[in-house]
Length: 294
Image (cartoon, rainbow, N blue to C red; front, side, top):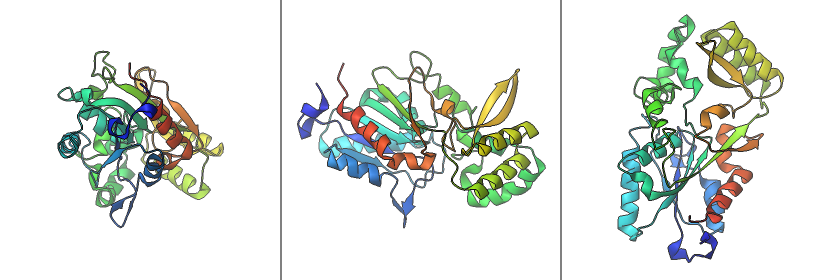
């Protein structure tokens, strides 16, 4: 039965799961404000899972998500499934929750917006041995306290052990859990907004990066007026870093891909703007309203 034909009491609630360092105003979470207005307009029920400041190991938060869902059931008497709509690091939080104790049975569909399913190559900078980066590292630790060995940044490395285990879970060993419908929405080829910032970041990344070739790939992408996104590759058996326009400025598109799920590409929208983009919101609403129980 299509959700649009159900009564309000039967509707499947959405759980919104934000990512790393989400937007706040005076310590109030505003990451989902535009999305929530659209859900209210469509009379779609939702709950907002808040785990601020969201700077710790993403694999510590799933327990809190489980308690959040338990409390919803206890306070409302609701016994059905939930949809999850997550952004960025929220993908790791929600997916790790689903792999534990058969929790995936609580979830009807999972919608990832710019999901960090396979980490972010930018996080790999913490392993850089470049002298300049080692000198800058103490300053970065003052601002990004989660950049250490047990924080969000460390655990969003592309080859983080826990992330690799997560992505080999499920019956297909591809991170996809049975009985859950998956959707992925990603940004693609985002136009550069500020030439100065683009050039500055290019210089910094060259100094703390791994090679001249990496810097050249950064310049090649930025010359085409796109925001470069760092990606970790294997070329001729060697691990290298390059920059690509095939991303949203923070996460390369291939890092968001999961299993055989074909993503929806939103052109011209960056990582931090996807949760409030009208096209993205329309997709989320359509995924919800057009879901058909198998």
